[in-house]
Length: 255
Image (tube, rainbow, N blue to C red; front, side):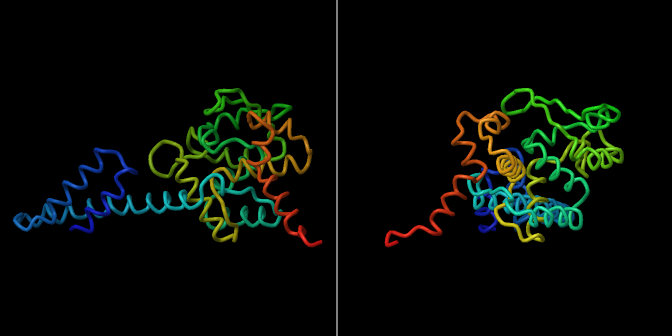
């Protein structure tokens, strides 16, 4: 009993007050030796265990986030690892998760903005000469134009089979998946693909990394990502760290 209360206290910051209080109350009821209503106790016990299982899953994700914060989340710098991630998402996750990854890497949109996309936004591009999707970014409230020519066929082929208004629907309920669910699926694929330091920002960072490698235009990339300074952009996409490491590999005071 004390162990459960200790775990509950640790989890308090990760859940809403009402859910926390309800679970603690139910736990007290179940473990009360003076309560002899076995039928109600067994029913509530299942509810409590389900609640703590949900908490446990949530905590596992939060632990990964703490151990793998945004500054440690890296772009995927290797072409083979990109292909391995695509394979793992298709094989071990779903077409939805695969398209989320592809669209994120091709556009550099934040995962939160990707999850707000509606299916009709993709379907409406069919027949248009240029595949430009205009959206308002949630964080900056700025209009962003995404050119989807390179991935439109794959994204459209997926969208025509989506039976939801949301492009990335949850299997539970009528809404889109949450950033936490996206994080879970990306890390599941990363485990199979053998790719480290993966988080939701990996998609956006990967876009930035390969855009810079192809163009060397940090000013343009800074504008696309809406950063206030080029040094922030270089650090964000891992170029600063990469260049530093390359120098340190051959640097010696005694040479």
